[in-house]
Image (cartoon, rainbow, N blue to C red; front, side, top):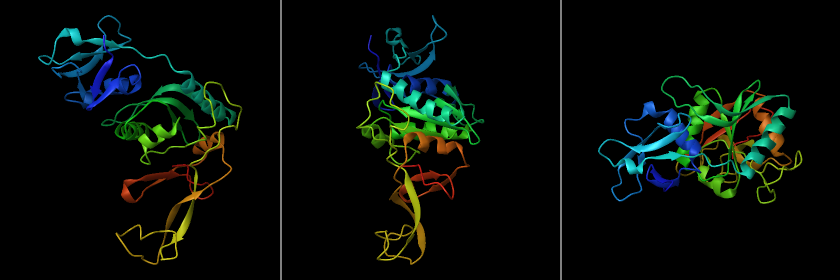
Length: 276
């Protein structure tokens, strides 16, 4: 039986998108009808429910009148792939070496009106945060939704994309920490400090003039205002993925809405920005 289904109009394999589908099920009360569609010719609407033969599994089935029982199938969790498991282990080791408690597969408990999420890692620290190690494809919409849910649950997540392709899919709309992914083989555990953080930026004040760093004023469509604005594009060199991740736990976080809807999060004063 096919493991394919349409999620919000995109054809996905349920085995590789298990986490997203599980989140969808756990937040089922938020939907009048779930955004799932059958791949068969009738294109009937579908929903997620606990399996009638195994209450520890979730299955996808049709709403009444949308299709037959022959389309019902259990969603199987694909065995965790080695790179994903290794990447999580590397991140957990860095946080534990810094003295923090790390809980894998942590389910958040947000206030009413917000979705719960399941984090790859939850780091219990002075400023608790989550880690999302992402190797499989993901839509920007899902990344933003999961980030919002984790944030409202008290665990602002830091995304660690496993490749340039995934980093591009996530975009600059959630906090992500890139690394030298073309030089690291995550099939084996790298030594501590081996992975370099490549997307950390240092925040500087830029003068909004013709000779300044801006092509035009960030607060208007054209021209220059002569004032000072944050300039986010200066690389901060010498950081490892280990240090870049653990810095998240050391100080309270600030956030700002940038032009074009982009979001940047950073520890104030002494630390550079760790959003991409």
